[in-house]
Image 1 (cartoon, helix red, strand yellow):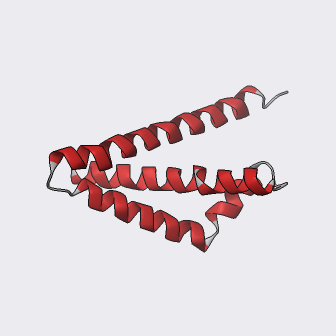
Image 2: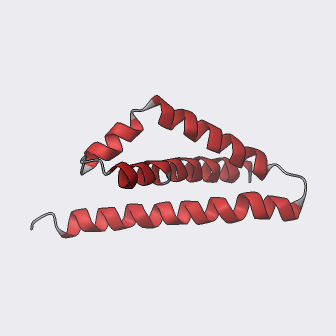
Length: 103
């Protein structure tokens, strides 16, 4: 179960940091970067990885809470929701790439 909590924390942290602040900043400042350049610029940034480590630590600590209600409220619900959203976004992007590859 500890491996599952760790993997879920890591996936949720990367998804939250990748889709959260970067999407808001791109919309707010209307950056002109398109395609995979947005993703590569984010993944190579040290601020991105420091944010991922901070969010991962928060999820890791929330998953270790002794109170079952707080653990469900602060870890299981957010981590599974964020991971599911990340998987849906990745699936949609891959679908679009493979569907319109020959267009």
